[in-house]
Length: 337
Image (spheres, helix red, strand yellow):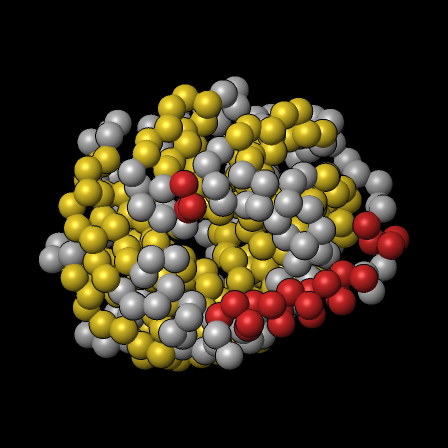
């Protein structure tokens, strides 16, 4: 079964789960935004736009037209722009994270599905999910220059760069692999097989472990990457369609969305065990967390909504209508990464 068929099967399961989600959980009273004063941005992948949401009223104030199929976004190192990657338009849209005004567009960035800056701020990396390569760009604080295009094989998906800015990690969603690229030589160091449809990848603070969400399964795989070759050390059962990670902000926990199970799991990074679950209807995808850690924001991919979850009560307290197939979500007032 190819990746598109596998994703289609997951979508059907997620839709069925959404239809059975208790209505009462979707209509709980919503408190005011918790620790968020700047706009919330939601990328509408199948509407080629960004929804801008006012967190004081939880209303969409405008939609920003972007290139085709914006999927992910990332803050520039100077925190003056949030970059939206438009995969099918081969472009990047820079938006002011405080005013939600478009600043500029950079074209000629081939198939930027996922994107990330290195911690040392010298490199900007994109994954070409459709065209099977990873691009490594030099970053001078304003402009990017292509340094190397690395052929990866089938379908590079999500990226992580270690804290020392020496290694890029990428999942390969159609060949079920995790690969490592040496930033010094800009070549592939190793690749290893994973479970079904690996999506997001998340590294621990000491760079020892990589966590991989299995969208085609129901778990997060843990790999020890401290040696010359990776070793799978653990499988953490989270929920069907484990997909995207977000640091909880307390330097100990990470969240993972389970797209088919319609939940979010909280993983303790010291014990590598699930310690909590939250409801997240509509095919949860990307996540952000309010600055004070009291609210979880998650895109409900199949319901065309942004879902807000109260951490203390573990309840959905708000759903905001957005565009088709909402994917990335982000606000400047997020919890520490």
